[in-house]
Image 1 (cartoon, rainbow, N blue to C red):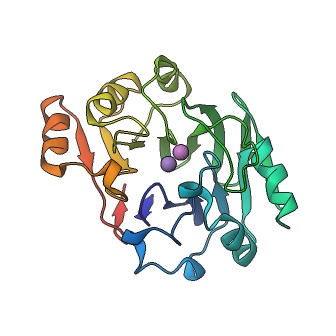
Image 2: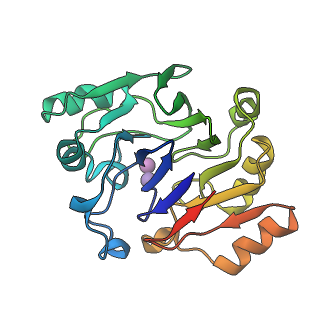
Length: 226
Ligand code: NI
Ligand code: MN
């Protein structure tokens, strides 16, 4: 599997020859000015919730790629009004079998409203099981006890968690989250994009190391093999 980072919580996972794009937000991200949203390819787009820093490029990338968009029912309803109908609605606890594996939509503790004020349903995360391995993307969330359910659904090879604090978990809670989900290989996202969520990278990595865990803070444009 390969992970490519586009900034904030936007990343691409390549598995079984398929491209899964998460939370497309490039336009308006001052850190991602070297990334061209128009050149991103995707077979699937997975949306955790409706905030602008997760959907800014959703409609345009969905249209130019023709990808199947998965997200909360309310988000797929909103997309239909923007002319994007190749969608699959989910709600908590629901699974969808796709050609690369199974997507399960799980709880996140956050909020969700779309950029035009439309209610976005509940915010969520995804547990993805594939033949090449399993991973969890929590979406924007606080630490929550529900994360202890994740290892019952899948033995994770890696997880993608927000670490920027202020609007989501910070580093200390992300360490606890890694323990809850029983996963030692964490990729941090949702940091440094704006002043509110700037973090000290060395301190963050040290806290994970002290807990016997590995934290990767990817660079924008970087691809990591997993
Ligand atoms: Ni958010
Ligand atoms: Mn966010």
